[in-house]
Image (cartoon, rainbow, N blue to C red; front, side, top):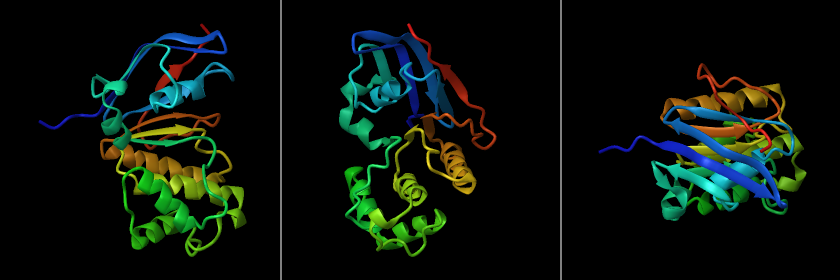
Length: 211
């Protein structure tokens, strides 16, 4: 039987520096849906995203992927997840091609050169594959990092401030990409200071408030 992907938060709470950031957060996201995490600075948006990705401990409650706690299926969950933080996480001394090969390999994927060049062309980076990342502008670096999404088969995309350093064309490109992902049954969780529509799919809103 085919599994319909789902992500759930059950009574989720977060403590940082001895302070309760949020508590008793419940939410459910299913195939083709996306979650917009909002809230004031310091309320725990990035902490929540890091918990979803298994990069920060779950203080209370649980996070479920396909109705099973993520800590009980670490490897399978990692294969279903693609996380992009607000930092680009690129190696400045490596070329664009080398960075993409390295990042996709971490996700268990071996992208061929033709795929990589096709993706770079889509992101307005045609002919940049052999260029060192240190020679790119901040906007170009962001596009390189985000192009990883196209090469990933992950069902769940978690994006922390994905529109940083992107111009209007880049923002639209990414929004269209997320919309395509949702249309194929994927899920997305993102936080951003910029409210951007994702195709015709309304966001599920999660407004974090200090506990």
